[in-house]
Length: 442
Ligand code: AR6
Image: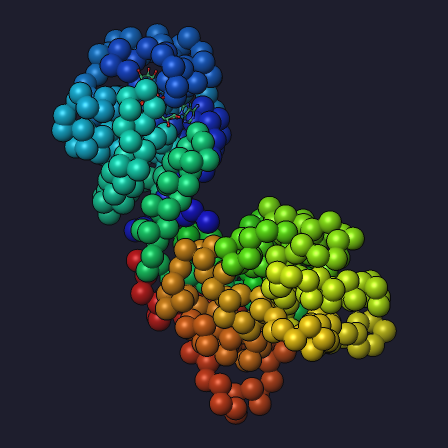
């Protein structure tokens, strides 16, 4: 998640069209000296703004490299356009200073106009030939350095045109993010218990969003897709998107991409398959050729042929990896106890003589995969949950801090054992106060 919070200013990068940024106070134009339409960013902005923009630009031109001027947005969804002339790489010197001037001067104008949000393109990296990696470093360093001086600007967005540029920005933001504390939040028992929200959970999530604290909602569910959990949260007024739901299938697809690339044999309900993203699935009848055999909560769909197919896949050469989506032994259904993932994984381990990699709480690989998404080191991360073993001990073993809440499955006896939470809160409602006292903000 490419979002950085510095000095109460959020800095994000997205892929898109700079001329299509509704809700943003000012967009920045990678202009030419004469402030004419041209190609690239300038062309897109002038096309969307209509001829009125070119007319307003006329008396303001020409501008020098590094300079910025402001006009109205005309037919654009934004009140203002700030026009900057980036340096032509290899011609205008000193290029790095001139490029930094563009970002600094544009922010200066935004402040004068009392603008809250501004969107930048990757100035000079198109026709002007500035290498993207270098230009990205300058752009991000400049805006981060400016943040202590910003009073009205609260949101800075970089709008990138292609996947490659977006990745360069995401990586650079990720590096800056290192050291920013992040939070993993257990869902059931922390934000809600059954169909009832925990009092104060909505306000705490709003506080997390308002302060740009990187966070993920963590669950061990592999029988319900992330979209169902997003809908459930929405019923409590908590609005989030699927990217923030971190479940064993999400962890598995991420982990397998680096540890066992190739085709995966998926033993999960159909509805859950979408959670695996770009992971390539093995033909559902194949009995060999898998790089991994992934076992989830298949419930009543487990039959002898299905289980035996998983076994045959594991016995094929080269041997695939056995992956368990959590190791829950059983769960409480409406008509009684039901077998979960672990018994089937144990049967397969025993028969095929192998050991499963567990991607679900409390495994370290699972927490690590979540922290990878947040671009956060374990030492900078905190897990909050109601399960002293699965949440608190699991997090602590992964090198994170673990907070226990006295809601959900919490029992007073939990505090009499060997596991010592880093904090015990009555509920997640107390998190903001605890955070302000205990966490070093960047
Ligand atoms: N939205 C966001 N980014 C875009 C868009 C768009 N609609 N279109 C292109 N980009 P450039 P420069 C990306 O060439 O290097 C103009 O013709 C593009 O892929 O627009 O500062 C002016 O008239 C690249 O990564 O700006 C000037 O003469 C980045 O935005 C000259 O080009 C900047 O590309 C300015 O050149």
